[in-house]
Image 1 (cartoon, chains in turn red, purple):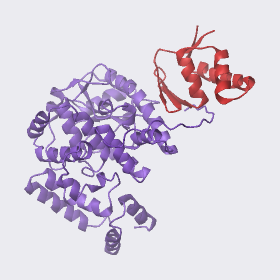
Image 2 (tube, one colour):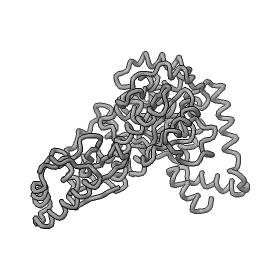
Image 3 (cartoon, helix red, strand yellow):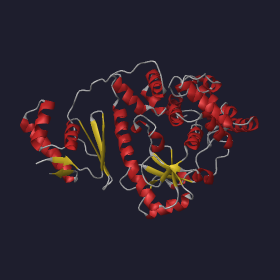
Length: 87
Length: 357
């Protein structure tokens, strides 16, 4: 299943290793850095959970189990805020 | 604010040529010259400095990284807040400074702003309309009595203030242009929010020049970077003509002269040699420079008669006491100012605070 950040009414930008974002509908803002920013950028393009796990494990030289836990936690947070679209 | 992190090493980026060849290269050269990050923050160049530090492989201090994040949020939030304001009030709205200047920067996020200054036909009426639409007051009302804008407002959940102006802040001793004059010439703005207008470029340049004289005349480099960015590509004769129409030709010539000297390799004007020397070093003014900056600027902006009156006012303030402080304390304070003449003003003020004045 493809996962993608919502295109509509979500503004964000990358600064150095960080991403800051504003949810226009809720006037809510959030920031993420390091691994979160990496996952965010992948999600902006559209990706799958497994690809995210692989990408995170490679980038931070961590095992797949830990990467999967981190990815799931991040996706859950984004889902909770209504920022993800599933295709 | 949600946060998510693993540690990642930072990589230095490419280093740009050292010799200034244009506005932004000159700004980089000034940033390189600064000896304290605090000075860059004072001059409102800290966001540009963070980028420059990164490019040159220097560590970006934590507080600058935080300032960058905040600036990015403000930049993202600004159009949303402007849209809310536009929906709440149906008369003319002209955005001054802030995002209208930021769009002239290579990266708009690098121009700091903490509020949105909107010039409207009737600030009190606009204030009521925004409050009715859900905006909430920010700060204490007493602080804004008799100021050039009413109490700032915020859209709930948003950190950016909206300041509604009856008139722009102008140079002390010079007549500000009328509201009608400013609103009548308004043009389509650059924020992309429909109905949010901007001042025509020449008038906006004058407003920015006038603003650079508020508080400490030509006190902050950031104001002059703004002016250089906004006037880039504009016809100098047209700017001079606009300054003449607004009866601010002398102040304009001083301001643009200093700006050109700093960023366009122009001749070094007297203002820069006498009382605005700290700009060239990208540092905060010393106590002595701060005093000179109260006495001399009127002679570079006003007619001799007005300058004399401004000096008389300064004299009365300099000789007077602060509130009900005893004369002995006033004399001690004066003696310390002499001893600290070459210290940065904020260092001097900190010492006074620590010593209980």
